[in-house]
Amino acid sequence: MEKTTRQVETKSAAETQALAAKLAAEMPAGTVLCLHGELGAGKTCFVQGLAKALGVRRAVGSPTFTLINEYRGTKPLAHVDLYRVRGAADAFGLGLEDYLFHFDGIVAIEWAERIADLLPADCWHVNLAPGADEGSRLVTWVRGAADAK
Ligand SMILES: Nc1ncnc2c1ncn2[C@@H]1O[C@H](COP(=O)(O)OP(=O)(O)OP(=O)(O)O)[C@@H](O)[C@H]1O
Ligand SMILES: [Mg+2]
Image (cartoon, rainbow, N blue to C red):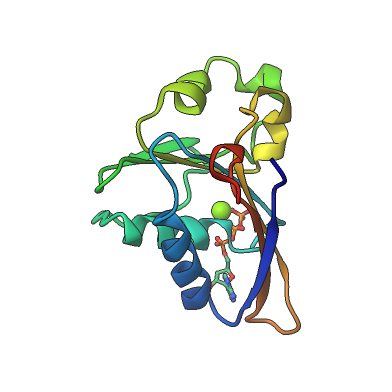
């Protein structure tokens, strides 16, 4: 099925979170969401929006050192940050397969391209790029294949 790419310019971190919250409502359990964009692009900010939408009470930070944080919400949320992972070989042993293929919630992965070969075929992809000014971002996304319209 043809996948449609959509794009919105957000004018603030709050707008990026609101967009994430809106999209969270369309993500079934089992969704793997790959987040792309440079340092400071807003990937963690986007995950914070997902967390809010799922009613997660704990503050969502960056799992840079732990690599994977799990949160309880209306659906479980797993937040993975692969910045320190150089490739699939490095990722081996993190238990990622369980998150990629058997997680009953939403799995959001920063720097997902580091494990491109391991990703399921039907991931959602969200890319964040600098916008026209300091506080704006171009957010581009493609839904997972299973529910692409
Ligand atoms: N429109 C916007 N959308 C998202 N974040 C924005 C926006 N405008 C400004 N910001 C700011 O940009 C920063 C984004 O930081 P964030 O930690 O989310 O980036 P990141 O992509 O996760 O970086 P890293 O790769 O280091 O983990 C925050 O300080 C946020 O307030
Ligand atoms: Mg981050």
